[in-house]
Image (cartoon, rainbow, N blue to C red; front, side, top):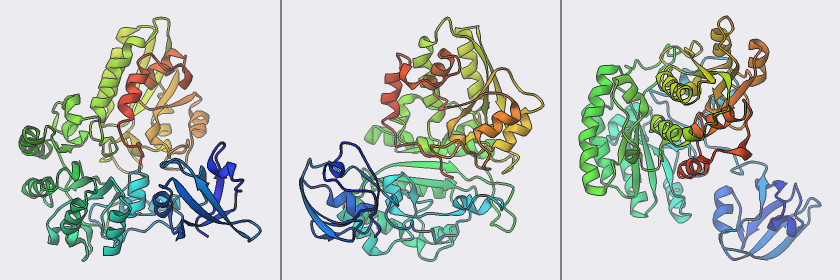
Length: 462
């Protein structure tokens, strides 16, 4: 009963067939529906026979002629129709293992499910899969798929993931590449473990599978203050980040000559730590790796440059922009440009230090409502407060510590506005006197929308 309908979209096939909430789709063209991948694959026909169990228990069969890429127009009770597969690794760098006790249960769930990699952009290690699962990816053309590689050395990968079955990663990548499955890959780089020469070797191994492997994102390991009893890791500093940038740059220059793209990119944190300039826009090719923190600063700069001309001369107001340590200087520069364009707009940028997870965590997306309140309540800035939307649970107004925007407003006595922290969204808020008004986007908004729509849907992983 996994394919139980929970919502009918107006104007869709399901509404025309008079399907109802609670009906269960049993099969399509005689094939049982086990999960969302079955459904998506089997619906990709122009003629289908649909077997449905009605609320009464009766089983009805429908014959449907439709467009090739048209689905029924329904939502299911469970998004993937069964339980997400739990990660079986014990990675030496796992962020979830570094969470404090007492947080909501969903934050402690480690998924490692290829279906979520396809549907939501999550990364998977492939260690949770049988050979038949790999064959299913190939059969159903589940592509692109996002894969956490970390290293191509079999023994080192077993050590890093604490999983004796983790060493066959390159064989599986080769099999997927031979079947023309597109892959985006990720490496969490840990100084002294898989960085330096080992990182270069892994990148070169992955490059051999280009173009099936489309790109590699390298992100530095993160550490909270709750690592007691866990593997002792070293964090990047200015010197080690600079060395990594220069080492990888040699490969990037080589790949640009060969394929017209750098293939591997480092997350922004490397450049900020090293005090080095962020690459230009062309380097990021449509900003496809934003979810890994790759190119976010350049994207912000571009969006400000393109939308700043649409800041209204008559706009005015005072705002406090809240951000983390990592983006602080960048947000300050952005605020300065806005105020130089219109001196009636006052922007005060506040850097929030992460006390909840520890000061080594510097990204805005991992700040909590409690830290914001504690650090602003006795020294609050002017006007309305603007926070980046990636601080909040996707689609909601809840922080990682379960405080809400309403809680912030109550504690600080100020209106709190969530913003994408792109030039378009921020300029719109200022132009509309602190109101979020998507219907009155700036003239430059379409240009930014086109740029952003080239990216995968941004999702802040909890």
